[in-house]
Amino acid sequence: MQHSTLNSHFSLFKFSTISQPVSLSRFQIDRSSLMTNVLSFTPTTPLLRHLSVFSILRRRHNPTTLKSPPHTLSQSPLRCAPHPPPRPSRSASALPAPADGLMQDAGATAVVLAGAYGLVLCFDNLTQRNLLRQNLSRKLVHILSGIFFMLSWPIFSTSTDARYFASVVPLVNCLRLLLHGFSLVTNEGLVKSVTREGNPKELLRGPLYYVLILILCALVFWRESPVGLISLAMMCGGDGVADIMGRKFGSIKIPYNPKKSWAGSISMFLFGFLISMGMLYYYSFLGYFELNWIQTAEKVAFVALVATLVESLPITEVLDDNVSVPLASMAAAYLSFSL
Image (tube, rainbow, N blue to C red; front, top):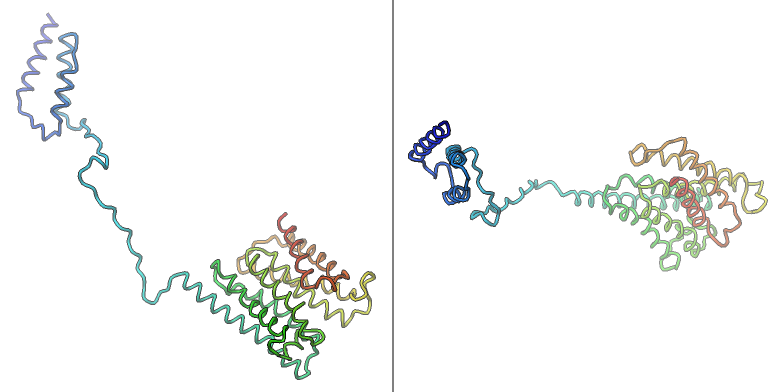
């Protein structure tokens, strides 16, 4: 009795619901898919049959449960073209960053080149007027040229090409030494200021090696490693001061090399160490390096000791000090700062 009552109630609800007009377009229902769902479901009992119809009709009146089929890009009839990226606004007076770096490097190269030429010209005039001895003039040029070159690196830009612009300065001096060394151009003042005996052929040895080491350190190490700065400091400052002090106070000679003195070797160690530490502090102050100064002092002292021992060896006739000292300093500094 209860079963028949339930059937009658569900039948009345079914017919009353179907008889009401329903706008399929309003609820966005696919009629064919609805009929397929109804026909494909075959319940075994009348109660389940009425319940299935009731659930279908309920979904039919509840549009929130319907989900439209996902549309892919290939099925969609409308395709929107991607929006072009916005063009950056450029001022007429503003230059791109590469152009700014290029102008900065070109200006820095001109300034350093003029300074290097002025330095040599100044000592040329002092030597010609006999206000400065030739050997002292040569060593002062040796010391100051390398120090000023290292001090000038921060005025170049942060571009990867900046090191090549900086290398133009010693490269121009290299070409100048070649021209005067082969006597293609004569300049007695230059020869007297940078040679020991006033022979132009000397320009093709020590002075030429000197500028080649400057180019090597600028290209290989630049402002990215303290190795190049320490190597140049040992060659320019340490070796240069060692020669001056050795000639002045070098009465006591080293037993294994009578051409070297204890005064010169001690000066080599002290000034090589001090100038190296000064350069590292200069670059650390500008933000290029972050160093532990106690460990750095120990490492620089080790490099100075190695450079001093190499400079004192009796190998000058075979290998010039402008080659042996910086190469030994590079090896020692690389090992020290890489550990």
